[in-house]
Length: 310
Ligand code: ATP
Image (cartoon, rainbow, N blue to C red):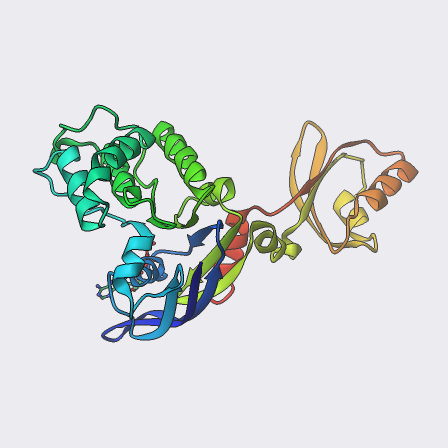
């Protein structure tokens, strides 16, 4: 549904996007993640035809973004980082205007407007002036304008930024519903949002793609980051960290505090060391309170991948 090859954007001496390639399939919901200034917004703006590329090609819904911009705009719904709302218009006037620009047939415009306002939780708000809306409600209008022409592809730039937790949950549910029939790319700094909504994420850093993978695939890249948290009761004159560290399967042991007479150990191992640790503890007659496997989360994967090159 979206295909990008060698897409590049240069702003003077700044190489904002540096020859990226990626594909997003029909019905997929993909997260764009990356540090500030990574090039996420620039990529989204090129895909939506808002800014020209310096080099490379991109197609959306089978249309070339640069040669067939009008067809692309009809196929795409775009929520920019800061939606350009006309502050003196009412919500109804604005959405009718957008419907006209996006070529929704005249007789369908009122119906579409009513439907999308209901979908984003704005029913009955037609006469509210845009300039008087709170951030959350402006974001809802931004989403309503993105879907008024029923596009196949949605590009959402930080759709929940600045929303309160309740609104955030509501908008996420709404996006999940939209994604059932559409292809969605969304950028966000909230990695739990990616975990809640996306099957796959594309990590951009310094204008390049550092990783494009399923969320499990991304977490697996910090394989060395799988840790085991062990708590063994202190034993007089025994260095428990050294004893556990001496096991063949264990690569590294770091002390992780002592509470209520139990020593915490942070264990790293290439394979699951828990059986070996349990055998050791039983053999020595020690007491064990906890043995937990700690998988890296997306945040750890993000930091690992981003820091890798710094
Ligand atoms: P954020 O997470 O902070 O929104 P981003 O990943 O969306 O960041 P972009 O906004 O795409 O990053 O910016 C990528 C780079 O391009 C940055 O170095 C930015 O300063 C630069 N840049 C973006 N827009 C312009 C512009 N209009 N003129 C010059 N440089 C720009």
